[in-house]
Length: 602
Image (cartoon, rainbow, N blue to C red):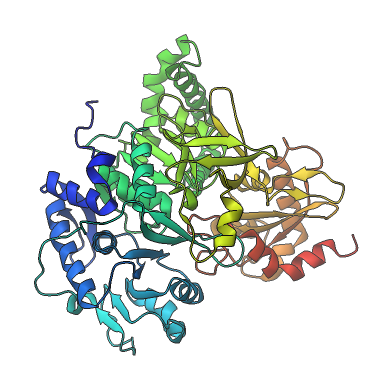
């Protein structure tokens, strides 16, 4: 592969707005974005030149609103071109962008907009307005709400404007303020934390830009790559990796229509670069295992052989294993097994990033063995976000890789991972006490994650300091490890292990809908009847499957009680973060009565 000559360096960009200006000037006619137009039922493209022209119109509209440098502007929209236009228009004028999850709850939006004193909010359309309408009187600082789609008279609020009427008929050139400070505040990103109110992470141009450039140095991305974007741009993993990094490298970004249509979009777009959270890979893995269960023994043996030989091949390529005659079988096994799976991912993937949560090693090994180049990364919103990532030629599935160039990582005496470097946030918005708690006097950011770093520099995340469960007998358990193991069974869609200060561990489980239907009907029960959730036949089945998934865990890390729930945890109801991590504290509070019944008398 030829080196990418189109990469824009840190010195050439200086700021995020400078990055956009440099990209649109350097490759004006190259395709920047691909997107689906539902009105015409077709995929369309925009060049960098077109993006620059349209973004200039957004800047003119911002100026007509009387917005000034330092004012906060919010965006609540799914991934699409207009997200980039909003962001770059704001960045060039010295405004501070405040991204919100596109389907966030109204109460959370009201809290964030008031806390950050957001003056203007851009939404996508009806779905967002349905969240905002009940709390529209709790948005005192917002003087303008712009909707990309027409609300057709639904919005009885003088602040609401449709994008087409808000944008000016003509505009000048895209502008970047001459004295824009690269170390100045450019964005406040509210963490979708697992406890309490979200905190506003203050990030500068240099925080994000340096992190983007350092991350790019670890990849083999080329200017003919195409990235399929589907994680929310309101989250820093996608924003840095799927937006700024793509812009810095000069590659095309295609916006997926939805998670539900992701499988189809993979076949249409055929991406070479993908960024995802582990749950997506886990679901694909679970479907593979389900399919194998329905096939004859010879097919299962062939799949196992493909994984075994593929893993030998991967280890040989990584220079950790010797050549073996078994590798001569790979072309045939690739054709019969592996190629059929990689084709479902588009057939061209050269880099597949997994971040936001731990990827189970068995899942990672299977994909790597089948030729899917999965690379784990690690970071936090407060670190812009990437701290470490695996490399194509140095990839250990159990590890999150090596520190980024220019990033220092260290492990404190209590096992907590500490980080220092250009990507560390400026602090929390209007919260100096919390800032001082997580950034010490030597500039080390305290991640809250337990980790170890081996002699070669590879980082292994082993848990969260706050999430460790201490049983009544003093034994310590990492619930995340157990939850990942239990969720590897396709029947268990969502899992939360509990037991802090209790005599034994229990688990709350939301079953996967289709598998639940199949299980209950097979037991001659009604899947819609709440009583089926605790029927003895069902629970016998559930306990056997849980025990099977936890067979390699120590004796004290076993589940004694399980409760099945019929209400899924989602981003919309507030129990999942946008990267699909469970909000442990909120779920436990919500299920207080159920938990009390579990431990009653113990």
